[in-house]
Amino acid sequence: MILAVILISVVAAILGLTVVLELKRDLMMLQQNSYRTGRYRRWLSESGDTTSWPRLAMIAIFMLSLSTLSHPYISAALMALCGLTVSVRLLQARYKKPLVWTARARRIYAAALVIAAGAGTGLVFILSHTDALLTLSGVCTALTGCYCASHIITMAAVTVLTPVESAINRRYYNDARRRLRSMPGLRVIGITGSYGKTSTKHYLHRILSEQFDTLMTPGSFNTTLGVIRTVREHLKPYNEVFICEMGAKNIGDVREICELVRPSMGIITAVGPQHLESFGTIENVQRAKFELADALPADGCAIVNDDFEYIADRPVDNTACCRYGISAVGAEWRAEDIRYTAHGTTFTVTGPEGRRLPLSTRLMGECNVSDLLAAVVCAIRLGVPDAKIAAAVASIEPVEHRLTVKDVPGGLTILDDAFNSNPVGSRMALEVLGTFTGGKRIVITPGMIELGSQQEELNREFGRHIAANADVAIVVGRYNRQAITEGIAEGGMDPKAVHTVDTFNQAQEILRSIAAAGDTVLYENDLPDTFK
Image 1 (cartoon, rainbow, N blue to C red):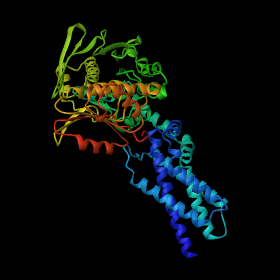
Image 2 (cartoon, rainbow, N blue to C red):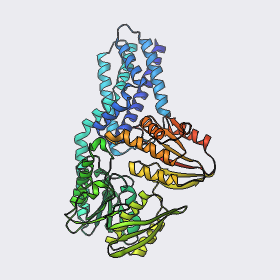
Image 3 (cartoon, rainbow, N blue to C red):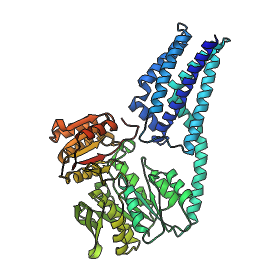
Image 4 (tube, one colour):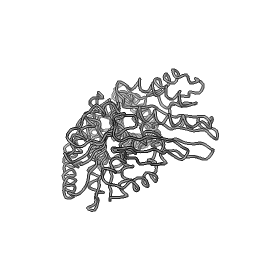
């Protein structure tokens, strides 16, 4: 009897570890979905996580344990086997974007553990017996049930904490607003766009730092809460310029940030088919991005990229407007004479009244030139001298994972464009790859995401661009595999040069087997763990 109690206790401990680890993984995926239960539910539906074999096996064992026909020892043995297998897998798993233990994440995790403990205790009470062994079996059954319902428990934790989070966010919002209002001389520059906003932010920060004490939102802190955190933790009384990146996945997101920071200048880098899953239509994307221009004061200035149709045809009449572009005929600010070399890019900024400013940069690709152009126009509007602009542009370091070029041991050249991918940026990255002719041109990519109803067609077109600019393609994951490979085939690439793999590690193994000195490798996009 004592030995049986010990064994069942070990099973309960294993299952307890399984529940703790699974709730942590669920929280990580919730965090990658911006803590939004609607997006999280959509991910659950699309990923098949609720019907994975461990989940289905545990559900079957849970139902078996409730049956009067089952033997407690048999159920416990099955629970132990399945729980141990799941725990080992979770402990060994490595994620591209691990869980960040923010204060909010800790609150949700604690609430989930409390809910799981409460639900488990209730189930044990229902299944309770006077016999210690059977009671322990009931604990194992309850823990198994908690594992099976971990997604529900995680979402319940978010729901329970909603009033708490709202109160905390409102307090932080008011504190950030107070800090901003206490600095009436602070110039706030908002930057938004379907893509290019983070790079433009970095370039503008480097240029303006030649003239002003400048702060920018770090990393991808481009939500309202991210901006609030930046203001509360980083804004100093002596800052003269605050560059605020403004992300948006829904109409009203940019307007909410603008109401907080009150920008006097704004840059709209692009309006394209990004985040169409949440926006629905390109017209909604346009409306969301132009919330920045609409929020500017009469004595402010909007700087907008006319290379995009849905920017060029959108009037701005509430404030001054500088339109820039590379191919846009009507843009008053342009980047001309663009030339790529092994050391970077040279180009000339042309503006009103015959203005010309020759520049050179270590950055590669037309997308980077476009982002630099926006930053230069903004700097000129703020009175930064040409010599300081030229010096800053020449010293700008590439933003990590945004079409950076580096040589690695073995004679390979790496084009790293892994941060994100969109129809415009991916095409430009492939065109840069196409200019390297010293060896094989290899692209490793999972394709593009969040393109709504255009997802399949745009990834098929992406495949055609791969065929036109690369010699070897390694397609990672299953999410876009069919569309990309179909596009590659339509582009005429040799089928033997196309490899499909499930993971990035498998792609690396293929790369090691085929790469030689003189080859160039483009890493285009790197999907988060919410996509397979």
